[in-house]
Length: 203
Image 1 (cartoon, rainbow, N blue to C red):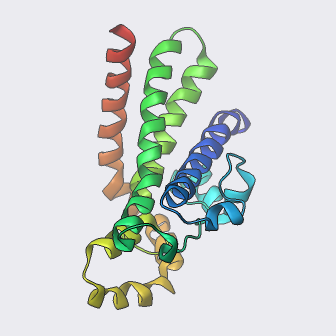
Image 2 (cartoon, one colour):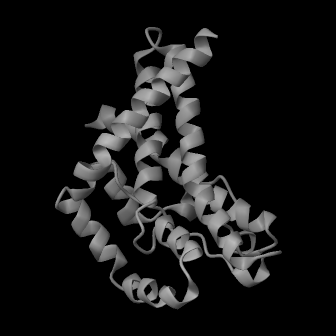
């Protein structure tokens, strides 16, 4: 258990930090100073940690970080498009880190057991974090992506759902529904990422 934590914990901290930093950076680039003013435009993992979400990542490989607050009224251009870009930035960054993990895995495989295990954990955690956050239930990114796509008249339902979002997510994890739905997709992505890394290393 301790050995597993020594491998997975750095991967979890990196995945969470990159995810939330990417949200903050996207908002910052769009003209919103809120993440920077709140100390969230940082690669220090501590401001981004949500204790329950981090625990869920360790136990179930499904979890979340403390959401970055943004003010779309500060965005340059279309606010709805801006929220879509900010919401997508987190999962997209996790997929990018997973791809880098795939390259690292193929570089160190057979050389270092620890680093190959860390690289695989990096792929696993980032893929699951990206997929889980795409679920359209508040406060996950998927709900913000959905709100950016849906007509404004339908936003009321998402606002009502927000009060029960965390409870619904915990129930989905406890009842193993997330594993059954996202598990096959994640495994397919993980295998593809490892193959991608093999291609890049061998190129």
